[in-house]
Length: 293
Length: 228
Image 1 (cartoon, each protein chain N blue to C red):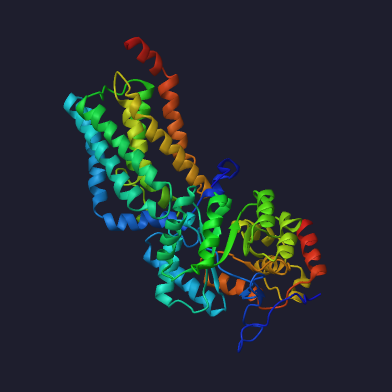
Image 2: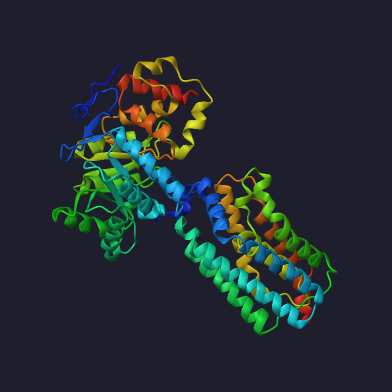
């Protein structure tokens, strides 16, 4: 029951066991590791120097484990600055995949906000810029496409979370030449499987999954029960890996972005993308098992 | 963001409990020993209340205005704003309360103080002393560091509660314009603590609601009507 999904071989010189598998961004073919790093809440630590250093260590371990995509937003408080601090402290990896969002009602202010975000990160340009929660997407998308055409960013996307506005997202996916969408999808919140994930595959749109652990609520629910013995068949040693493998094994999913403050969790999350992944039958078994808990 | 109404408070919370309480810890470390001055100011408010002169009332209003302005600038604007997008607005609200205290309390002398005779006044005095002396203990009693203690004149919650207490035990004519901002802050703070899963989230909203109840139900409205 092991997936033969369109996974790319891990990076040259790195063993399959220790490096995360990657999946291509459908619009370009560029491989992206299946697990990224979110920054909602976890990196919003303000001017707390110790917490900034701890965040940088999380980033260090993320990069060492083969991670590339870090996602943030102007809505996340000091997270962008903390990411910038980490990149400056660690040295920016050549293969960093910087994903951020534009989140402002006035379309005319979008460029200025994105420039401020870029300065916070301390990078020459973003790889991916997304319209956060579809806010003023009609005004922002033309700007983002123009920036992409001008080489100021590489990919364009839109986001939603908490299962909201899927209908509107579907319409935008059908009408616009998006590279990415970002949405919430996890063992319990599986609505995206019905229309958005199949549509993403059909339209060649890469998918980033946020809230893989329901912002921390999912794992305590699962932790009340023992991990099923058959989880070992897909190299799961924890509920976190069980939950992550379920998400990233969906063929439409390009990358899940769990957020954490703990190095052990980063290592565990990245390991979820390094071992065997469930196939369709195993995924159905996982969902049914969780539904019956 | 659209559809704000469809988000729960927890969905909107943008920092962790650890980050929130560390903010107080670092703030207290940077300020030390200004907390002692703040507590001394709180003690002087109590002594001034016992003096019950017009000048004493104006001095109390001045002390409160100073505390609100300090919290607006040093806590909300300088520190809380680094982790909360709403903190700039909180700073403005606290600065507005400081201006109201200066205008109504110091310049116009609208705060007057009588002996703590009525239930409302006795509760006000109790609330003030609670905010001054007991509020800093809440965190340590829950196992958090003393460095994270929230102190009158320095942190927003005890400052708001102490102000409500003083307004309750002020005398003949309640100064209604001074109530909304501290009362609303207590509700906002309670909501934040609830979203953080803090076990003490009910304390400030409950005390604020009791204050409102005492002001409205316990004859204050009638009293106001009869004096006009």
